[in-house]
Image (cartoon, rainbow, N blue to C red; front, side):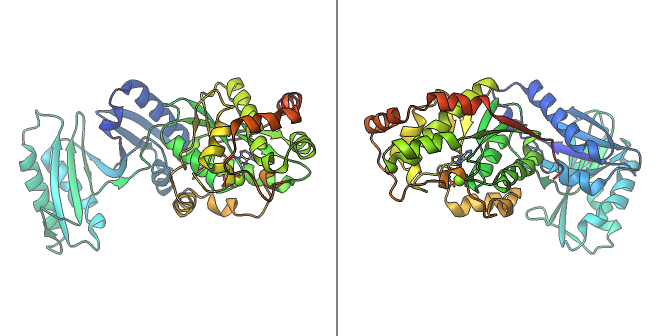
Length: 394
Ligand code: ATP
Ligand code: MG
């Protein structure tokens, strides 16, 4: 029996968007993702994407797992393909469906008919299929129309009919690449990989910039960040990480400005450099992992002061999340264990004991002028180093 995979996307998500572009990006993302698992035919029809394994060598569990991580797919189900006549449908149901019903007490059968020329109505097909399930399971399972443990569906489509049990929830969101490009400020912490995940889920194509402070921060700290990007690539696609050294900027700030402004001014410098990288890389927005009130540099006043140096939007998808909520996403996406490895981030180098939590813009600018950072920022940008992390299997 031929088993195929039906991937559905929420029709509502397409409102006002270009459906053709959505589909073609999604198809190409799926093809790229499942390529390591064998050969497939992937096509879309009527808001469903059909993934058909070609040949016997396909790694089916791997394929299924992978499909569940592709943004833009709302549900995935394994289905048996059958000829479009009721005898063939019934035979397929009897053979294919019973394993899906193990441990379940009730089921409901339903039918969808895309082909209105099919000689039976949907309720007739459903009734026939329901009877076939009862027969195949020797009455071990009952019918419930209201709250079934399992939904058995027959879809009569253009060329074939498909039989399947419950659909499994997919990653949801929008296909990566349908919502523009954005540059993620990626630290080694818990929050920024989560912020990247959330924006990739909304369809943004992401690349990253990481600031290091060698020799105050170690080679291990950078490796950790590259490993985070590597993990992220399983849902964001290939990741490019630009590493920028801010050692010179930090030393200048330490020598010239009032200590309590150090972190704020470093963050403004990071934002200016990030904006320049974004422009070089055709990114239309920045993304950070900031969360309101989490630390001194993330009060509303401090955020205003750092935001002011960016001339493109700064997206902060974690802004309203508690740390526990952020950690929950980090665990789900697999970055948490790497994020908590104990290597220092550049933000903690020379960090003041009493940072300003309610900075006033005029005073910030006054302090910043003492440091004369523009030349150092230009040099930092010129010496940027790029790392590629190819798309990884999940
Ligand atoms: P995270 O868990 O993401 O490190 P955090 O709570 O430690 O967040 P901060 O260190 O204040 O917060 O950083 C806030 C945001 O600034 C980070 O989420 C990230 O987007 C950016 N950022 C901080 N340090 C760096 C860095 N070294 N390189 C790139 N971006 C950084
Ligand atoms: Mg951090």
